[in-house]
Length: 203
Image (cartoon, rainbow, N blue to C red; front, side, top):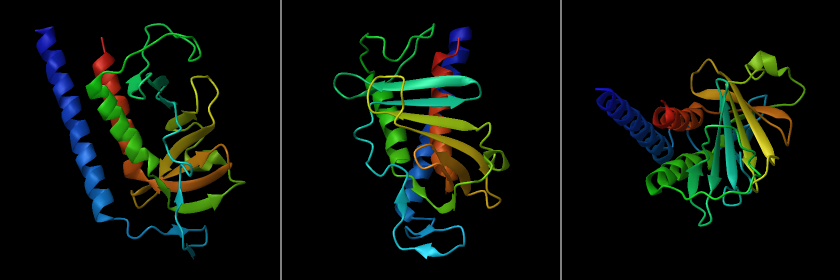
């Protein structure tokens, strides 16, 4: 009976993830948040919005997600396809060993990171704030981006509390040391990927 329960659980997880991706697609295509405008802390509109990844995602070789006491590492194989870097015992990211991406997982991970790469800052609070006031110390989610297969990220993001409007969430980036808000659906997109990995690797 256990295989049946595990298969049902896997189907439920994949179903939830598919539903989340549909919501993300509708939000992005219908532009529910309005035109791409960027607001400063005073609410004044700045004409050009700011992408969370100014240089794009193509140069990113690995992504590390940390949530609820666990870390999830995603790398690209020799062909550039994404895979979940899973080991029963911890292995340094720089340890030389090969992996081949599973096609279904590669497509799923690529979709999630593709959506994340289009994240826009919605409101900038600047620097000099206490991260604990925004749920950033400790954060709900931490994201590290790597340009190569090392243990040294080129930038880290942390995600904290949701704003009262339930549409935006506070985030901090290491390279600029500033707090801003990002759309909550972008965070949910990453959380759904973590849920899928947890469901697939659960004993």
